[in-house]
Amino acid sequence: MKCIFNLSIFLFIFTVSAKGQNKTLDELNLKYLNWYNQDLARDRFAGTSVNKAYEQILNDSSQFGKTIIVAVIDGGVNIEHEDLKGRIWVNEDEIPGNNIDDDHNGYIDDIHGWNFIGNQNGENIHYENFEYTRIIKKNNKHDPSYIRAKKIHHSELAKKQEEKQKINRFQIAYERAKSIIKSETGISVHSAGDLALITTNTVQVFEAKKFLQGRYAAGLTEEGLQKMIKSNEEFTKYFLNTDFEARNLVGDNPEDLDDKFYGNPDVIGPEPEHGTSVAGVIAAIRGNAIGIDGIASQVKIMAIRSTPAGDERDKDVALSIYYAVDNGADIINMSFGKDFSPQKEFIDNAVKYAKEKGVLLIHASGNSGKNIDVEENYPNDRDLNGIEASNWLEVGASSMYLNTEIAAFFSNYGAKHVDIFAPGVNIISTDISNTYSMSDGTSLAAPVVSGIAALLLSRYPDLKPEEVIDILLSSALTFTKPKKVLVPSETRKKRKKTKFSALSKSGGIVNAYNALMEAEKRKK
Image 1 (cartoon, rainbow, N blue to C red):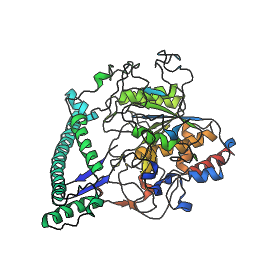
Image 2: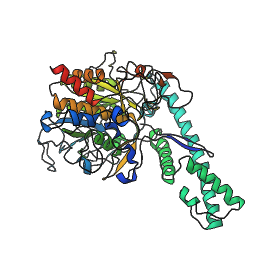
Image 3: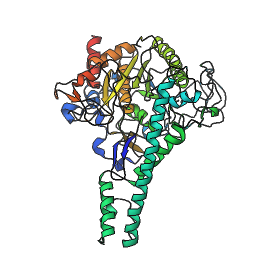
Image 4: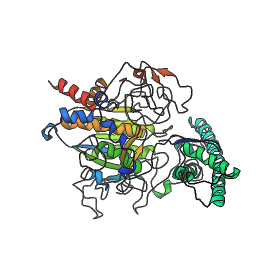
């Protein structure tokens, strides 16, 4: 999921950050804590009425059926987080650490899941190319996607090179302003608070102070600047670099689905922040006086690592789905996406296998602010023949307040190919170590739906994926005011307006209370 910044030497504005810095809970704005669980009528936030559902429907443990297993296919999950204790799936048929495949599933010591982007020596892939970079590296000009891939790669590389020049110019100006103040006043400036200490008022100090005040007012932090520098380096060094090759570490053939017994049991990996936030929304312990309140109580997270920093490979995603299904997952959450899918049939067949086994797949629609009825986004619910999978839910991101910006500006949308919206802005969730962070993205909206689907299945375990989907869509929260909302767009400029109902199949926001009431009504 993208981080989008607009930076110049005169203006430094963070237009959206998909991932915030990890902090203790007290360091975050607690106004946003658990808002996705709240109720529009009661709390004024356009949440999903999860708390209301617990208070009025799920008010004792007898209301739950079975424990639901939700597989989180992601970049890793911090399975040791304080707010996920007891919420991590355990493979009871495997003996930990004996280096033996006790359950004979082909994966040694897979106690909590599996890592498809590592090797048997415990080494892991951290960074990967984007898919279009891998396509142009093959230099197969007969590939129908080659020309488009090359065009996108050329455009993105040029943008990142220009961005690097702007960053360098900004850094020079920023450090010069700080240096002037230091030499004239002896004050080391690192934030807006330091500027208040300045009493010297020479022309040079005045201009330097004015420059820094403008930058800090626009949202600049030194931590954010370093994050921007790192992001730019990741693009040029890894994502877009045709000389970078990560896959040799794994030792498999990434285009051969039969070559499937590879990887290692390290489900945390080098950068588990994203997957940990996803897992927290679904399953963080409710009411324990620490951290956040996840959505589902009777739930276990199966951690499957297949998405690096960069683009995931179709083979790894397909095998992750097979692994999840074969090891008992009821729901699979997939908070990732890309623009190309060279081995799409691998995933299509895995989705069909999941359907046969009664497993629900929930996917984040993406953060490009585009209409995916028109522009492709992968993976998706359509096979190569255009047949839609009936066990697939595509999720867009909604905002906190019921106003013209209820659809998050970055969210992908589509009346045909996005099923429902869910909270995906200012979401506080679990992070590395025992920290927390606040993030935006459809990556957080998808697990909101996964959590609510788990609530439904826990109470009504006989529901088929198609029935769960129908209940969630038919019970979605819809509204008539405002009559029109701003259509998502990555640029945030000159945005059109339309009815919120035109942005997805359901035309609404997922609602736990409504869904449980609808399921109960259908049961009678």
